[in-house]
Length: 214
Image (tube, rainbow, N blue to C red; front, side):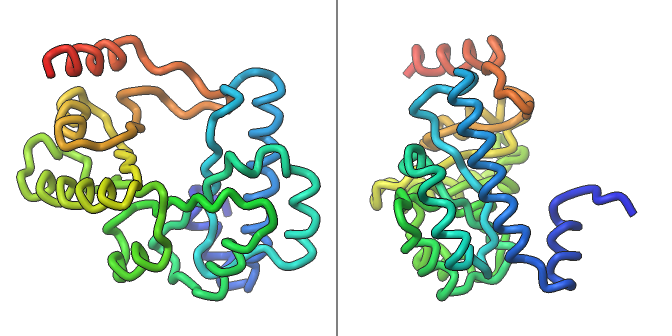
């Protein structure tokens, strides 16, 4: 059968007790690719690498010992991104925090999509909070706007940043800017590619025009 998406891979790995293998492959391959992009000057040297990490597992001792010597020169730029879809393990979280050379930066992905949102937010204490599902049509939905406004206020009081994902229209972009989000992501800005692409000119102009009117 064709593996159509990450959710399907995780479902099979969970059933086969192979989540630790997926975690190891994802972390090592992501970091290797990012390092190569830096060397080829395809990303800025100070760019951050957000690595999707499974909340219930962590690298074992052997993998952690092997990882640091290979990537110590860029570990300060790594953000460990944890999704709410997988139950968060306190033991795994501690091991992630204690990885030698770890920058200490976490991101909480898909904020609001899980059952323990507030608990995960407190336990993880992320530097970055990603919002996705509530961004769609946010320019037309007051309730979504209120939710984003609340989480922006919470994050900024704790020196954390909000990343609005899934932006597909000019109207969505303008609304999340108005609500105070810090970073933007989505098809309206650029499409995902093996080699990161520049932000579309139209999107840049929209952002510039917004700030001129402020």
